[in-house]
Image: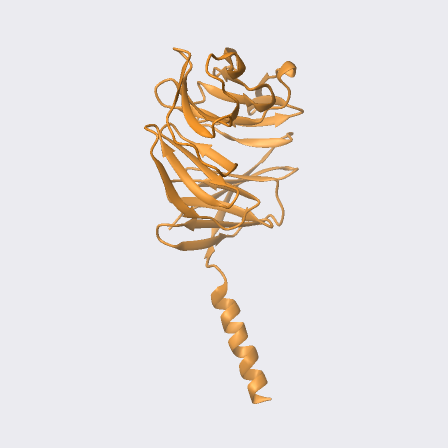
Amino acid sequence: MRNLILFFFFTTISIAFGQNPKLQSSKINYVTIDANLFLGYDQFGFYYTIKNNVFSKTKDSESIEYKNISLGKITKVDLQNPLNIVLFYENFNTVILLDNQLNEVQKINFSEHIIPIVATATGIASQNQLWVYNSLNQQIGLYNYLKKNYKTISTSFPESIKYYQSDFNTFYWIDEKNNWYSCDIFGKITKKGKISDFDSIEIISDNLFIISKDSILTIEDIEKNQKFEIEILEKTFKKFYYKDQILSIFTSEGITNYKIIIP
């Protein structure tokens, strides 16, 4: 009996110590939205969503929409510059640039370019350029949308892209083996490390990311080798979004915004 008690005691201790420490969050507000997908918000207080393949920005009673039925489903939206929004339609190998009123500024069909390009990843980069992952040669390139020229900047890599994200100076991706890489605008590729299995992920910085697995949110710092489970009220959700210490949780009813402070 004594051995059995000791076994359960040490098992309980092991489980307790095996769990990630908690990162508390403070609820800020709740926003009701009618959408299939929540994409994020900008510094002006506009929320960006997609419903029935219509791209929208809303703030209070103000709402603006953009739709392009001829290009099919919107694959990816880049909101880094709300004055120059990037919509990617992968099935038609096309990018649409929108201004802050969601007016179409430029249409880029990579199939019409003199250099063969089949884009499977895009995002806005610095100096009037777009990140483009060309699946034909499995290399990253930069497309100047003013000069309409394209240059390959990276070597090829064999594994397919499972997830990607970019900012003005860096293109991040995670391959099918959950290896995390980055590529700067000069084409230098850096392996960041291995990431745990995830349902969804958002890269916050060069060493920090948030993952969702089975509706549990975990923030991880690969440089410090730290993990924290983020406490939220929702048991299930469709998507999460992080920006400037605000964590937004999107469910079928709306968005709950939390304040979190990353250690």
